[in-house]
Image (cartoon, rainbow, N blue to C red; front, side, top):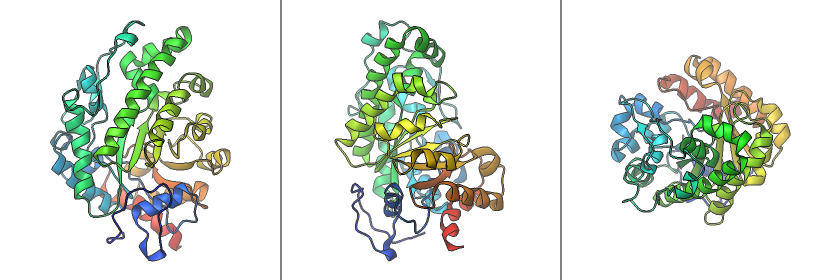
Amino acid sequence: MIQNSRQQAYTGHQTPRCKEDYGHRVQVEMALNFETPYRTPVQNFSNITAVHSGGYQFKDARCTPALSAKLALRFAKLTHSDFVKPALDTNGQLIDTGLDVKQPDDNYGRVMSTLINEPEDVDKLELYDPFNPRECPMFTKGFVDNISMVSKTMDEDFHVLGMSWGPFTTAAFLRGAENIMMDINFEPDLVKKMVSKTAVFCEEIQLRCIEAGATALWMSDPTASEDMISSEMYEKLAFDGTKQVCTSVKSKTKVPIMVHMCGDTMETMKLLPDAGVECFSCDVKNDLAVARKNIGKRMALMGNLDPVKVLWQGTPETIRSASYGCIEAAGQEGGFILAPGCESPRDCSDENMIAMGMAGIDYWMK
């Protein structure tokens, strides 16, 4: 780990560098640019894992910026990650919309209700302004303040991750996943209308995260997976929302946008470079070698260690071997960030998480 790397803002792939000064952001920038790696950058895909590693429950950190920052930064350094993400309760951003979100003491919140029950509810729906704390006290406490504290207190140039759900997944939360699946077949225009509206909301969430100190954006869109909808459905109903967010955010900032989808996404991911996505985080269901062949150098890839079988239940030796396999499949010429195929499990051991981080360094020292 480089302890004296410069504090620098993301500069749109133009950062001057020299070999003795490979900081976290420079290394990620090289991956996004498909430059020959000095090492493979790593995203520990951690949130609650970092809290548990520090000996706390999630309730202790989700709205406690100082503790959230301390735990996240400790874990990023420990696991040799190039990214740091504070304790963001992913569904916490939905509480201020009026959705009923249950927040367990030691896990993420669960959405228990819907807001769009009839087609006319879409026109009536008013989503909060992320820049107005009076309209979104929970988002401000759980996201803005946590991101701000990490940004202010870190002593390495980690990429600070801001986060929003993707437009299609946000629409699915508001409408209900089962309902939106029915709408795809019987009310496709309603789906387009919802996604267009949630895209504006997701954009504002991301811009507020950037203002708070985020230097990279994580947009998770699991409901858009091919396990839920076909790539053809995605192209017709969800693609425009993703493109709207990426195009608008990128017109205002140079912060890179990374999209994650769970499950099988081999066909859908082919569409994402045209939406402005710079890096796609794919699940273990996807063959990285085939994905790289399909995508070429149009978009960087991230992934895709099995979070359960490899990262949680494996050993440092099996994790190292699997990590090397990922790098060989997709990262020989850059354009790759090593990470779990989905979020690292809550109770994953420090030893195993460290093994993944070190693999990004050790592979290039063989």
